[in-house]
Length: 199
Image (cartoon, rainbow, N blue to C red; front, side):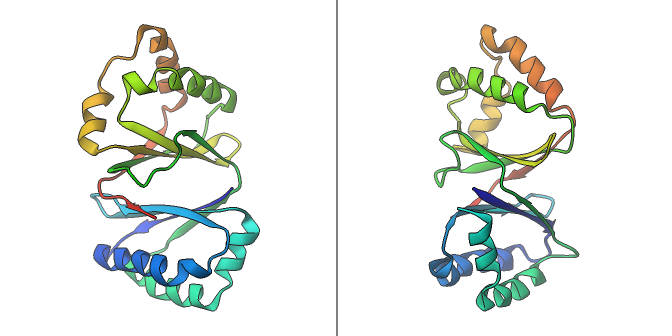
């Protein structure tokens, strides 16, 4: 899987949503290898999106289409300043992966210090209890942006459910693991998408 992460300060939230909807209806039919996208704008105006393709080749073929270039020329007008792009072919799904049923999406950006082996062990231990302890978490996608840096996209049933459950104490057998998780993710930036755009 190839993932492109797009992020920037948004000046026209409704215009950006219209552009994403337009891409879905007008450009997606010709985007071979496109798997889906998740986007939205945080309450403080940060626009965030991830686009998933079967491969980097498929993503490059899409970006070279004339209609894609014209669409982006219109879309970037919805941003206030530069837009960053981060590409990765190293992504992992957990639980049910991304979901169009999500009512709330939370992004966790960790720039350094992430241990892949530790996270994998924590994921496996968590998944055994997820259905009873955190039924609000549908699934997610962890995108490796470097050897020790990640962008994690978590899909929840709703923001109310996520807030209600995030303060719950973990099962006793997970307490130590989640203390370890907190250490691993100590330098994490959170971006909340209260109205996710799911395609």
